[in-house]
Length: 146
Image (cartoon, rainbow, N blue to C red; front, top):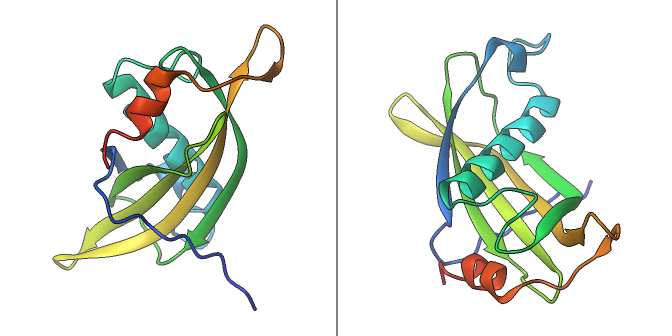
């Protein structure tokens, strides 16, 4: 079976988010559910944008919309764990970019990867309901960690 493989770049992350596992994130298997990981990456993305004075509706003059997502699950996470989410920007082009998320927790004194994820983001104009060109400001921000 082919598995999703997300390759992280060799440069520094744009941001590191810290997100505690909530009781609502736990499923019948008594670990974080796969749907909760999607919520974790959305929260991490919002923390990144807010930290830099942006939002999904205005990030350097662009709005953005998520076009696709990939998640590779690596290990269980449990209620009480604190997740660290390192966010990287990659594949920046004329109107799209990828955000990569390395989600980990510390267990028994050792960092353990919980999941790797990628969201394909598209610059979007909500007034015209069409894809928009990326502004120089957003491009500069996304490439600032290289």
